[in-house]
Structure formats: C-alpha cells, structure tokens
Image (cartoon, rainbow, N blue to C red; front, side, top):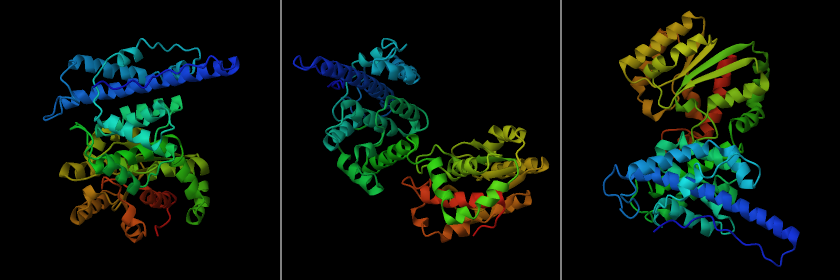
Amino acid sequence: MRRKPLCVLLLASLLMPISLATSASISNSKQARLEQLVEANIVAVHAYQMLLARKQQNMDPVCWPATPPDSDLEALVAHQTSLLNSSADAKAWASGSSSSFDPAKDLQPLLTAKLPMADNLPVNVFTAYLRTKAPKRSAAEIGSIANLYQTVLEVERDGDRLQDLYAFYIALGLPVYVGQFALPGSDEDLLAVGRQLEGKSCASPVGTSAAEWQIAGRKIWNWGEKDLHIRDANVVARELLAEPDVKQLEPKMRVLPAQRIAIIGHSYTMNLHWSSPSAFVPIVTAMFARENTSVQFRQFEAGGLTSSRALKNFYQDALAWHPDTVLFVVANHTDEDFNSLRTMAQGFIAAGARVVMFDDVHDPDSADPDQLKKESDIAREAGIEVVNVSPVLAASPDKARFLCLDHIHMTEPYHRLMAKQWIKVIVKQPLT
C-alpha cells in the first residue's frame, strides 16, 4: 500500500465574498505546500530506513520491499539533504512569497518517488495515534512531529539529520513536539503512549518496544523545548541566578579578571544531549554571559570522549588557545588513557594553566571504585586539582532522579547541581 499524500487542496466556495475567498485561497495554498514539504521528508527518511532494513534479516517485505534499487534510495536521501539546506527559501515558497526555491530540484523527486509505505510502518502508526489525540490539527502539523519520531527511532541520526529537521520545521512554523498539542509529557505519560503503540508496527530496523517509544518521546519533547528556547541553557541559567545560594556567588563571578576557561569533555558537558535542557558546562557559560563577559569559555567535546581521544583530537588546539583554566570530564579505562591524561595535564600546567577534574561525575560507565581511585591518584600525581564533588552528589535529595531513561546520561536536576559546583570551582569557593 502506498502512503496517502498529505497534500489535499481545498476549494474556496464560490458563494464566499471575494475578500474572504482570496484569504482562504492563500491559506489553502500555503497549507498544501507545507504538507508537501513534510511528506517529502517522511519519504526521504523512509528511503534511508529501507536501506537499513536491507542489511538486516527477517524484515517484513511488505514494509521493506526489495525495490527500488539502493541507488534510487540513496538519491532520495541526497535530495533531502539539499532540501533541508534551503529552509529560508522553502519558507518563503510555502507562504507564496517571492523565492528562489525550485520545487523541481529536490521536492518533486521525493514526492513522485512512489515508495510503498504500509499502514503499519512506525511513522504511520504514530501518525494515526496523533490524529486521534489531536483531531483538529492539520496534516502538516501532525506530519512534522511524526517525521521527527520516525527519524529519532533510528538512534544514530540523533545528532545530525534529526537536528536538521528540527531547524527546518521550526523555520516553517510547524510544531516539533507533542506539548504543542497540549498532550502530556512526563516519563510516565510517554511510557503509557509506548504501551499503546507497542506491537502495532511491522518488524523494523528501528526500535518500537514500549520503552523505545518512550525514549523517542522524551528525546522529541526535550529537544523541542530546547530548540524553541522554552527550556534551554539560557532559561536554566536565568533560573539558577535567581536562587539564593547562587546569588551569594554572583559578586565573586562579577569581579573575576578576564580569563579563558577550556573544557575538554564527553557528553555530560555537551549542550546537544537530549536528557536535559542543557548540560552544566553550557549552563554556567550562559550564566557568565550575563554576569561577566570577560570570562571566556570554549568547549572541546565529543560523546564518549576518553583521554586518549582527547589527546589525539583536541589537545593541541586547546593548548594553542592558551587557557587559564582547563576542566577535564573524560573517561579513562586503559593505561593509554591514563598516560594521555598525564601528558595533557603536564602540558597545560607547563603552559601556566590551572587544571581541574571532578573526583566522580557519576558516569555509570566509570563507576568502579578502584578505577576511580586510580584515576584520582594519577591525576593528583600529574598536578591536577581533583575536586571532591561525589559527597555533594551523594547527599542530594534529587539523586534518585539523576539518571535519565537510557541509564547513562543525566537529567536536569543533576546538571543544575553540577552547575553550582562548577561555578564554585571557577571562583575558588569550597564545595558544600
């Protein structure tokens, strides 16, 4: 079965007054064009997932047929890349304004691809669910969110194609998470949705268990709020600066002399991750942007960053930036990692920098007590200032809520608490 097109044009009534008929015609034209842009992206993501399905066994041939050939599917994926790079022109075209957007270049090849899309594909299952929960919403509005779910269910595209789609739909004024439909978004709510959807999709190269639908929902919700600036680093920074314990630190933040602070860190330091509105490092950076712009921050970051990778990929650039303070939040598992940590620390210290590490950031992948002690001992021997944050984290009343749904990354309560500790490190106030 071929997926039914989203774009269905409505005719203005001949009995309508001319002024209203003109207005309705413009509105319908814009709606049809938005639907076409959404439909094109749904087709392109399906093409990509068809390529994935062909590399796996026991895929449903109705959902994932053997035709068209891989080369055709790859061409559709390339058309989507080009389409997503034209959001400003596509927005003008959709609204009927003058635009250089050419539908024949990337849009029409996707719309005319005629890929079969069975009703029990995950994207169609979620589309049907949203139609029942938000029946007054347009096909384009439902489709934009369904397309984001469709994309995020394939977890390897979190950091690239998914983010491009967010930017594209936000530029078009389309919704990007179900909170904009006034639907609930707690972890429990999202799990309940997952249980409703579990078992309704064909065997797929993406995860469709109740828990996987739940995580998809959490990702879409959190990134939606972040990208719409409803809850992001700046919002959390503003909230923290209003809290009494942080207010006590503000005078010290304001009088700090001009300096450079480099952070070499894994995903716990990165703004991009989905588990929280932001991470403690960019939150503190946003706080200093309000309080003291002479303190400059620069992040050298990568998911799963070890000291070995940091030495290879970031050390020389960070050293060339001439930081006054360096914070390491890196994983160390092997002798090569420990030797790399020692090499970087000694290099920064020789250049006159203060080098800092936390004793334990509660990374489940680095939770072995003996390994943590070894890491701290090697760090101190290398001249690193090891900050004992673990007692603060252990004493937090929110510690049971730190871990997010993937049991790896951390939620907002963790990053709020760590932001306060990171500020204290910067202004050289003891942690409490």
